[in-house]
Length: 273
Image: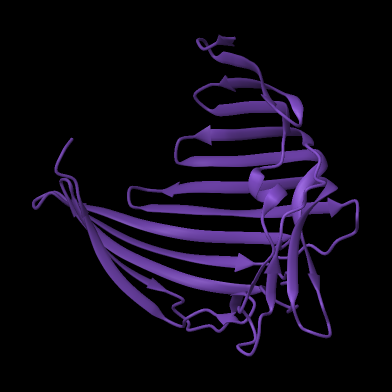
């Protein structure tokens, strides 16, 4: 059911599914939105249940060579004892300002009971990293702030930062989940009217907070600078991208050092409207 017109809009969705072994799996969601020329408010809340997949239940034991180069050191298998999970998630989004000059705040939080999540264990003797899904209660929340600034006719600035909170009832480690992220960028846009060409130049800085891997600690906590220049004529656009401009050394995944300066180019050309 929905009310799609007017400055205030809302919708309600109710449904259910069923499986042979896990019974009825209901879901319901409510969305509310209020919008004007200078502001936007939107809130959502939803509840759903999910049964484990056949992959999570019945994946046969598999061993492969992944890390060491000298033996089978990675293992994964399903878990026939899994229960269905239940979750409730809420979010609120707020923006204020005119188009191109806005400030935004987004908050999302929720609870998952009997969440189906892959747990890892490390055998210190053999060095084997094993994964298998388990049921665990998870509480999470994310807050993001953004700011857009339009300077005159040519320059646009965009930036933001996020904080992530995750808590496992079993006190498991938060692998590959940095608490903080931030970014900032600036774009210069000039229209060459005589040639009908749009010229663009963009630069950005991206920060990733510290986090842990399955085997390594102290990952993340890096700032990476990227640039991009491009031009467009009608439906054709060419771009040249320069990533990791300062040639920094970092790992987004353990034992996998990211490349240094990387330069690539490409184009898009739309033949059909």
